[in-house]
Length: 186
Image (cartoon, rainbow, N blue to C red; front, side, top):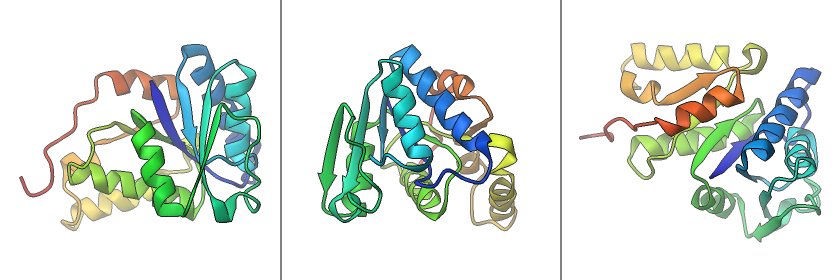
């Protein structure tokens, strides 16, 4: 199994974010789950990849040429694919992955999450999507999604397709039994 992880090229202010990334990497390595991610050696991205590799696991990075130097591409990965742009990066990561896990991160992390979330609603994929809600990081966003539903912009079954947990092992267990809801406009 390969899981695409969206997370930050920054470490975050609290060490809990790096600890969570490290824990995800360790669990992936222990369970033989291959990491697919954005290919950087910095931030929680680097912590995650280093933990997978330190545990003897496989880490596959996908990074746009323009970010190779700025995001400091990880040079110790199992594989690193350099692509033309961010659009190609997301498509390549999605193609490689059997599911998605989102750690805390910034605008880029949210953009990646919401793109695969939208694709799932449209039936473009049927892969599970999980949020690892480290230290309540995603609670404001989850309240916003509740408001979207309350205001009629997000169907409840679509909101419910996001697996929300604080523990990576629970997310992976829920991946096994994941069944996507109907697609939009059906």
